[in-house]
Image: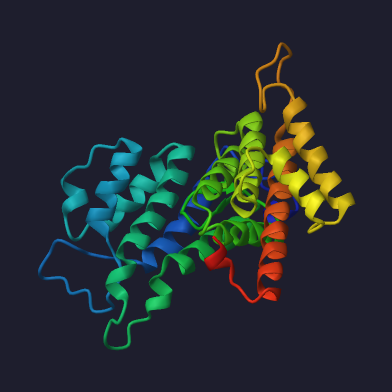
Length: 306
């Protein structure tokens, strides 16, 4: 964070995390320190992209103008002024449109990544990757206390401590073999951390993700309650820990507006949804690992079991 921001000297810098705002200096830093190092002048045969940069300025600006609903003019297509046009798009859009642009740039980088595989010469492929872009964006946002972080899908979510964010990514990656659960967990994460929060639905999806994994690992079970009963009967999970899982399930069933409709107004908050998300992730990782260890001890593999 800058000196003037750390010490509260800048009258234009609001206190606390930047969430519903995108100050001009933040847009400038994104453009100058991140985006400009990825772009080249395209759609002009006189201009050679010798560094094999991934994003053409004119094409990218056209895409961003769709997002920001800005009408392009001749200067945006002119080789000598197109860079200024891209900067103008970023500087003069609404705050939320700026973050749309941050996501779109990531999507564009992901789409061109396959073309860099096996590229000849001395191209710095890693520097042009989405992973590098994501890290740079998140580093800038962290430095300036911006309350958003770019996830692996190029979607901005509420900022989490790095260790927790890494855990969430790990859970999603571990659900590749559990398609339905992966979908539920992704929804839970978006509802809890995304720009359009829905606490009740997030909690519901967190429980559904846990339930889905449990039903795959324990066949002939219809509900999470059945799964937990099977765990308790088989003794694969310590009884006291199963009891914790049962209480998590009971909470979701009893909370108004989560698993069932009710006469009371829903009262779940952001922290409730976030806690449910982390509990679900922890439970999922745990039961997958327990099942994996049991299968390994019996000389099998998780893949064959699934």
